[in-house]
Image (cartoon, helix red, strand yellow):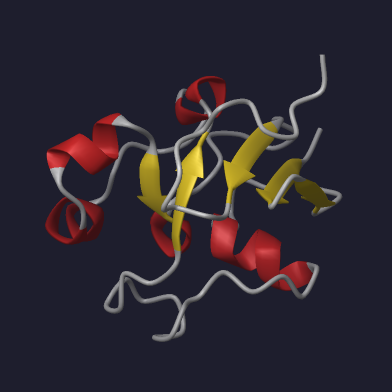
Length: 111
């Protein structure tokens, strides 16, 4: 199981899913930019991603930093900060939409 990032219909597979690494670190392992400008400290809010509905259940709850950076509406539609979002366990399958300006529609999902 792994963290898969989707941008423009193209999937980027991190190859792993590790509980101790946030989604930003998973993207960095495969040299995939997320927009982070503060080094992953939650200050810039630029590494916004959207988790598909199933993946939302497999990560930590929103952090206080996310609750400050993101509105309740954004959080309810699955918007998160990659630097603040951690898998709940090793070996999960997590899908992440990198373009936070659009809704998750199943883009890139395999049947």
